[in-house]
Structures are given as C-alpha cells and as structure tokens.
Length: 422
Image (tube, rainbow, N blue to C red):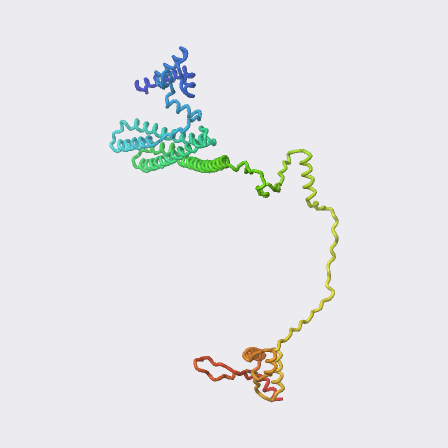
C-alpha cells in the first residue's frame, strides 16, 4: 500500500527541517543557554537558516532566541529548568480527548465509519500527549525539590517558588482526577459500544499508571509543604535574631556604663565582683595548662574499684536468746473504780448497786464529774457482761428524750444462778 502524496511530502519536509538543525547544531546549542547574536558569515548563515524554519525567533535587534517548543524539549532531556518553570496543563488535552471519544461513539452508532480510523489515531496522539506531559511534570517537580534551593539563590525566592509549585501541584492533582473520571467513562461505555481497541489503549497507557502518578504527586506535595514549614520557621527565627542584633546595636549600654569617678560615687559601682567561671577545656589541645587541668580533675575523682581486691568474709549473725518484756498498762482512776465496783458486787449480798453513789469522795478528789462517770462506767460494765439498768429521771417540759440520773448494776443472771445453787 503506497502512502498518500500529502503524507509523503510532509515526510520530506521533516527530513529537510532536521537536516537544517543538524547542520547548524552549534547555533542551537548556543541558543539553549541564552540569546545568540550575529557574528561571522558562516554563523549568520546558520542563524538565517534556522529563522527560516522557525527554530530561532527574533528577540531584539541583532539577537535571536530558540523556539520555546524546542527549548522545552531540550530542557526536558537535559533536566535543566528555569526559575518558576510552569507545569504543563493537561486540561485542554483531556477536553480534546473527550470530544474525540464522543465523536467515535457517534460514528459507531451512525454506521458511517469512513473517518473512524483517523479520529482514533488522533485520539491516540492526544493520549500520548497526556502521558508525556504528566510524566514531564513529575520529572520537573522531582528535579526542583531534589535540592534545597532549586534554581534560585535566596530564601525568600525559594519560599515564593515553593508556593508557586504548591499551587501547580494542586491544579495537577485536580486534572488527574478529571483524567481518572474520563478513563472510567471510556472503560464503561467502550464495552457496550464495541470500541474495544480504544478501551485497551486508554487502560494500558493511562489508567494502569494513574495510581503511580497520584502517589508520586502526593509525595511531592508533602515534601513541598514540609520545606515550606521549615523555611518559614527558619525565616521567623532569622527575623527574631535580626531584631535582637538591632536592639544590641541601638542599646547605649552595650559597652557598659560611663561613671564619673569622684567622691560622690557609690562604692558598690566600683567594687570588683568575682564571677565563677567553669572552664571548657578542649580535649584536642595539648599543653601544660590543659594537662594540669586534667590532672586536677583526675585527682578529684573517686578511685576505680579493684576487681581483684579480696573482700572480707561476712559471718552470719545469730540471736542467742530473747526475752519479752511485759508492759503493764497503768490503770486510770475510773478503771480502778470500775474494778472495785465489780468486786463489791461479788462480795455484797445486795442485788443491785448504784453506780452514781459509788465512792463519790474518791471521784471528787480526782475531779471526775457524775455524768462522765456514769457514761464511762456503764459502757465498761456492759462490756464486762454485767447487767445494767438505767434509772430514768422525771421528764421536764420541752424535753422529748428520756434522761437517766443513775445506773443500777448487778451480776449476770448466769452467775447469780450458780451462786444460788452453791
């Protein structure tokens, strides 16, 4: 199958353009680094030939620059990017690819397949452009963040450049989301429309690589955010330091006070004050003074333990005998009176004894009032198992609780029965 004449003519033109660029490669290499100017006849001939094929463009009078498309291609190959190199937007390519896809669907539904091959080929070119621009954008971002300052010199320019690329990364992320939605749309509709070749092309070239692109873009965005944070922090610390230096420069007391020495000067201002200074010795130095400092420090250290030193044998200790000292608690007057009352119950023939009438003289001698005595004696006698009864006083007006005025105590009923039986 022979190629159409138009396509054959375009191929011949491509060969001629590449041949011109090959013959004048020295001019193109000079133009990559900046502008080129007219020189000798041979050099000027190369400039005229390159201007004729639009590889060079007039810049100023007698100066020429490389075509931006060629410069972009060479910069991508050499990984040399100018400051604030913008990312290539792929929104137009996505929009064009969607339009071509809709046209393919319409052609398939209408049955007129004459232009289908050309449009499908054009869609393939657009898909390749999307892949190429996305990969080059990621290469550009990785190149810019591979160094601390990229292709700018100052910290403030780097901060602005990081902000610039941070916005570019957000836009590229949004475009990748649009591209993902477009590939999902093709993947769903291509099966029902019978466009299997288009579905295979899109899934193979784009959809299978979207996850890797998203991951690399997220890594770049995290790195830019981290470096922005660190750079702003350093910038704020430098600002605080500059303010401190400015204060030290303007402070009139930075070199001390000027005092006129006369009889009226306070002696405290002229008295020398000793300041304790801890010397910081440089161990890498060698000298007599440094050696003396080390010797003095070693002498103040505790001696190192001797691992071969004989230790004294510790003999076990034995307790030969022990004795328990019995501590007799000293009885109070109230306890003595209670015991005497109990003894009197066992010896007396009377059944009940009055606690209030028990030895009032002895209680008065030790300042024991009747109320405290009744309360304490009643509790102790009850604890000892004695039988007690409270003698109630006459109730007075306005008092609702019973008040006792005496406590009658007797032996327990069990002991009374044993005494009667005996």
